[in-house]
Length: 308
Ligand SMILES: NC(=O)c1ccc[n+]([C@@H]2O[C@H](COP(=O)([O-])OP(=O)(O)OC[C@H]3O[C@@H](n4cnc5c(N)ncnc54)[C@H](OP(=O)(O)O)[C@@H]3O)[C@@H](O)[C@H]2O)c1
Image 1 (spheres, rainbow, N blue to C red):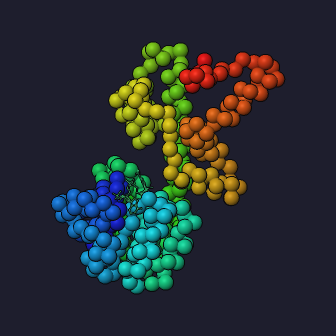
Image 2: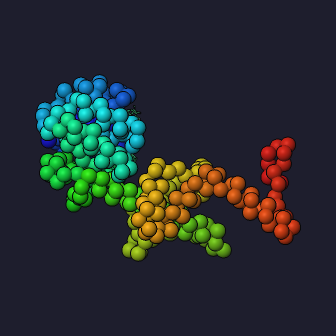
Image 3: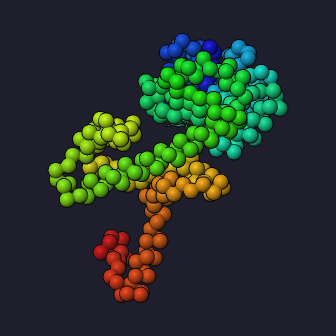
């Protein structure tokens, strides 16, 4: 089947390669043209502009956006709305906020262009392992792109979730769970690291062990095992953890629906704290203890900025 992919980052490039390996006709566009040319050397057709990409495809066309969510995705939906025709399908494969989907769909619907929201999971390993894909939109549109999904995903690794927004909603919750699982592993291994048995415990060996038949085995734990095997102390890393939106939206959803999700919320707040945003509240705690009980505080030397 033919597909146009716009956005050849870590995800889009690997998805394009997997589709090509599966025998699909891939046309591609990327802001930095060199990436599209790289893919062209492997058999894709490269377009220099979204306009050229739309012109390359045979109607009814399928264009899959794999861009950062928010402004970049929105701008490209508006762009392709002007380039595509009635009966074409545009798929947003980014981690878009599910509440943006209705507005994005409306932009395309004016032109008779169909819209699918796709939550994609698999990261940089998806090329080999397949991309787990969650689709929202009209079911006949999902059925039209199913040959692509069959190739992209591992066996039984894609699902029609429901109406517009439900694919991104499902992916958002998936990522909320991911935050919480990662936090639990991180805390458990930190407890091993600080334990009285620390000199005897090999953290990579324990991760490896737990991946063999234990209740908490998982792919995340396999990745952790690999990271610990490289450097057991993770000495080259700063304790700084970013987030890209889905965790915040999951917690907002928990508040809006009155559904308790304290573990996911805590995992999100831990990421904020890792970036120093808890420093002031921690100083306030120290100051209050000092005020009411005269408890000692640690001060920063004003001359060299170091802790005393
Ligand atoms: N990485 C993951 O594990 C993962 C997993 C699931 C879903 N996702 C989602 O998949 C999407 C793509 O992620 P990624 O990891 O592939 O990102 P990435 O590696 O950072 O690549 C981003 C892509 O978008 C293009 N781009 C960025 N800003 C643009 C703009 N303003 N205008 C036009 N093109 C722009 C980049 O073009 P240039 O090459 O010119 O920079 C690049 O092709 C995101 O929505 C992400 O949340 C990522």
